[in-house]
Structures are given as structure tokens and as C-alpha cells.
Image (tube, rainbow, N blue to C red; front, top):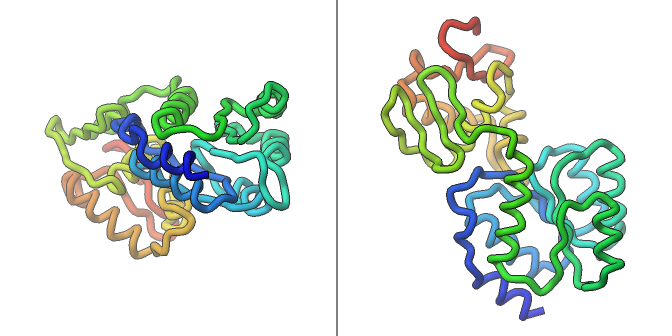
Length: 247
């Protein structure tokens, strides 16, 4: 046990810096291992949610969207294999990295045949965890350009550079996550509750007022209320639209 923890906590946890922030679900019933994996992935700027048993994980997957699932096989109530089977049967496409203490060919084959995208055997270090997570996230978004833009705004998901009217803008992680989300969903309207679900962790105690504050901060850095393309429609929500389009 301690071998796993030491290797995870003190490995190379900088390997994924500069990559697109993702929303990741970790399903692991051993608390110390769960906390160690969270430490590694949070250090990369990702939003992390967790579940400690199969029932909780299955419920989360029915409600919340994720960019990556890190799924242990041996779990209380429902196994990782069963969670994955149900998730794929329901049409879930999110990449899944399975974790197990069993280093057997049969176990790996069962996981991969069940819909897993990759397999990681305990104990493992942070460098390996980060590399495999990075590869799955990259594979999931490889058809998307690293440059997202709308009007005078440009965001590079790889270099994490943001330009407004040709000038660099320094954004805090949550501001960057909000802007990236809006750029990937241009023209769509999102309520404050929807933004809390998609951009914030489910465990966060943030409120609708939190969303309003962060959007105001983001707008202030992108030309202010009149020039920023992030608009508010009363009773509908927030949207990002290029200049000249109807609100």
C-alpha cells in the first residue's frame, strides 16, 4: 500500500502541464490511493470528482459529463467491470482508464473487452499515471483544433495563451476554464446551474452568485460588458456569440 502512495505522490507530477483542463471522475474505494491520484491530477489543473463505491459511480455517470474516468475494478456494491458495461451500454463514450492490483492477462483482456481504453496495474507512479491520462485526453480531443476563437478572442488549449484583439490576456484557471467551455459551445445558452455542473466540481459549494462573479471578472478582462461576446439573456442564461449575431 505505501509503495503505491509514495510512487504516486512523489513522481513527476508536472508532465501534463500546458494541456487542456479536463473534468475527471476517479472511482477508487481505498481513501489514501484516491487522495494520491487526486493530488497528481489536480496539480495538472484538472477538475476532479470522486466516488468510493460502484453505486455512487454509476449514479454520477448518469448525471454528470466527464472527459476521463479513472476506474478501479474491485469496488464495493458494484465492480468496475459492471460499471463500465452499463456505461458503454447506455452509450457512454468517455475514455476509461482502469486500475487493478491484478497483473494478469485475463484481467486485462476482460477490462479491454468490456470497453476500457487503457489499463494501469498497481503500484504505479505519477509519471505513468499522468502519461496515460494525457494520452487518453489527447485521443479524445485529437479531432479538435488546439486553437479556439470567436471574433477578437483566441484561446490556445495547448500553450494556454489567450489573445483579445491581438493582445495577450492573463486568465486565472477558472476564467480560462469558463472561456474554453464557452468557445467550445458557441451560440448555446447555459444557465448558472448548468455552468456549475459543467465547469465546477459537483463537490464544490459554489453558487449562482459565484458564476456571476467569475463571468464578470472574465468579461472585464475581455473588453468589458459591451465588447465581450459573452452575453446574458434574461430568463435563459449565458452565451458566447460573435459580434453581429442576434442575442
